[in-house]
Amino acid sequence: MSIIVGNGVLASGKPGQRLVNDMLRQRITTGIAIAVVFFVALFLLSPTGFSLAIACLVGYGAWEWSNLSGFSCLLQRLSYLCIVLIVLSLSAILINFPAVSALDFNAGQTILAYTVPWWAIALLWVQGYPSSAILWGSRWMRAIMGLLVLVPTWVAAVMLIHLDWGPWLVSLVVVLVATADIGAYFSGRRFGRRHLSPHVSPKKTWEGLFGGVLANVPIVIAIGVGFGLDAGQWLLLGLTVMATVFSSVLGDLLESMVKRHRGIKDSGNILPGHGGLLDRIDSLTAALPVFALITASSNGWF
Image 1 (tube, rainbow, N blue to C red):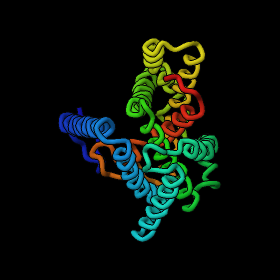
Image 2: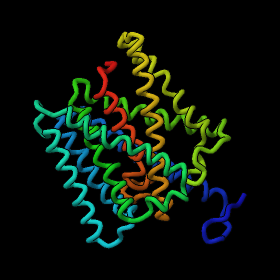
Image 3: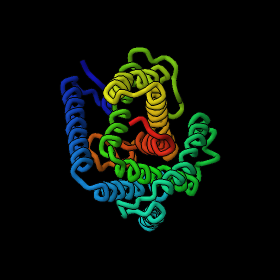
Image 4: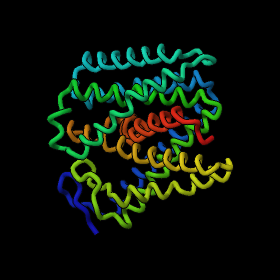
């Protein structure tokens, strides 16, 4: 068996298969390393330390988003990074961070209440792509989008990690998103027929989306039974999980749309086998703020 490689030369199947296996091995190794570092930081660092670590990730995400925005020269990209860090600092002042004992959750909730609805606009833009690019395709509009994606992610992470069950709540969001991603992959491969957004991500299907939601049902049941939730708390938990999963898909689609408009495959190359940082956290940039806003706006199910 032979395959055609990028330069048009025929190559034997074994070297090609070996290359695929090496890439898969690299991807798995990097993924495991990321997971270990993240959960060690989540459970061993103080809430302030973890919040600062997430701020560093957001800063690097801003560096990658500067490229997605279309800024190419070093000065432009550094300027955008500084703007994001300034807005991040202002948000920290508003929520009284890092005063752990007096973190202003009301201010954090207000920030999320004003920024999370922007994802409804993002949904319309994703559905309308490529025609919608006339509305957001300029460099400055994409730069503003980056602020709305990155800053609320940090605010949400800070709010969650400072709750009594903080590390477990952040873990729950990560697990929900990962489970939905795995469920969507396998159900989409098996049953996928109707494309979710063919011009943005041709491989995503409605069947995959609902498969991702169903994959999280065992988690909902385990939490509900484990915490002995009443009917109202069961309902709130179910709605929270559904909103978190749906928003995670939207976060993924938004970054894919901006990358497609920019004409690039990955947001960066810092993670071997995975691409850029934003390629790994795009789902969380929508899921974390949505989950945190619902949690802060209700009496909670926990």
